[in-house]
Image (cartoon, rainbow, N blue to C red; front, side, top):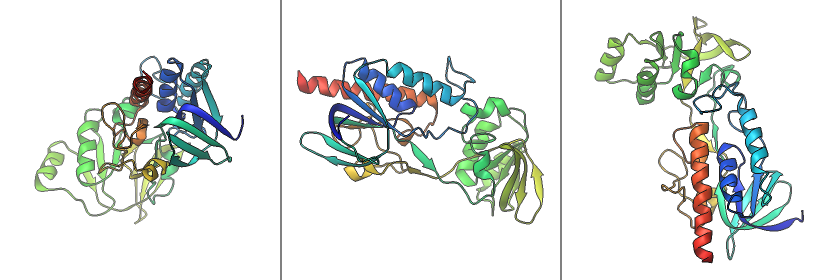
Length: 302
């Protein structure tokens, strides 16, 4: 491949959303470049769930099968690289990669995901996606009826507690500092026998990513089998922002019902623009983004 090449559409990010978008476009005979470095956010998660036909399958097996199917469409090209810069051109866009490549396209689809910001808790990242999880729908059934911690505070802790209580009654909220709940919230927690521990969390004792104990800064310990946490995040790629794509109040790329961003010709799908993080939702939004990008091209060419 030459250092500069033109495609109708460039898909930046080749995990579940990006692959889904590329499939819709390949089936529409669009020339597509799919740029991905093979680092999905769930790469440490042992099993994917709540995705019909693939429940309990290793996430990498799903993406590998999807990639092989997408690349059966001859108009789809895949490269192992990282997009590091994007600029508007006339017409369309230019994308520059870490390996020194330059590509142009009429439309862009960003399926770049987000980066979770790990807390200053020893061994937290070693357990993330294994026994410390973010989503009751993705992981809750497997840790049902287990002693479970919610490492959070305030409104977010209440949100998680309301969902997790249906999966286990042995539930403790670790606020890692002074609790931040109003009177009504305290009454709800008390009514549902949810315990609060306000000691600051220092670390996690685990075996191969599976929690044994949570360790507090006063050196005391509490045994748990699992924990939920809602982490702050940043966008994995700053290219959408630099192109002018607006973010919403949660830090996600703002899109409409057709996955269009606030910049003409640019679409976003998957975790970078979706509050409900799951493979099923990523695939759905990717399919929509691919179909709508194709429709825009078709209407412009008609």
